[in-house]
Image (tube, rainbow, N blue to C red; front, side, top):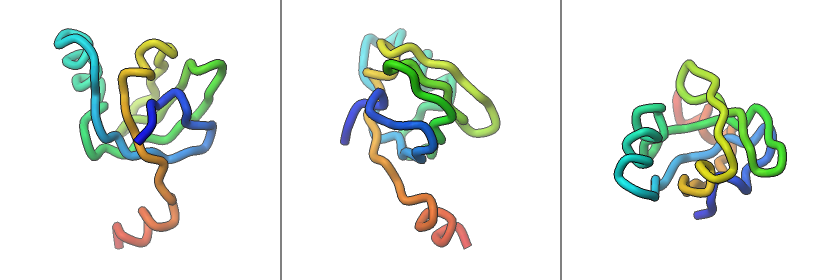
Length: 83
């Protein structure tokens, strides 16, 4: 489990945990960063990220991305398991 800032462009990640103050956690959860959700990294630059979350594209600063713990997933395995 690593902070989301370590994800690279094109990675598909599984959200494992959201950390931070209650207000920060609530904000991230409302944006779709819930445990078990699958997120695709569209762009990564110095820790700042643009992500596909559900049907939306969201930009996160490095500081916010540090509060989200994730595992990088194998996209082929995810697609195979959906069938």
